[in-house]
Amino acid sequence: MYICVCKAVTDSQIQTAIDNGMNTHRELDQCLGVGSGCGKCKRHIRELVNKNNVPFTFTHLHFNEQQTTPSLSGCSVSILIGLCTTYAIL
Image (tube, rainbow, N blue to C red):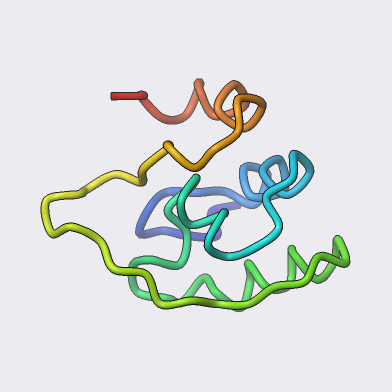
């Protein structure tokens, strides 16, 4: 199911990121882009993180206006491998 419609991110993608060590909103946002658009997904992200007993806080992140896709520079190699079928790495 899509959790973040702004960035087309599903619950399974978020769960994979959490399972591979992403445990803050900043890490999930840097890797997947979740929560950086309209913000309606934040409650669902919090639920997924809480389900895994991972501490979770939101931070306000600023993006370059020209940035249209999430930056993958903060992702671990295992996360990137899991996302290769979803995101084109530029």
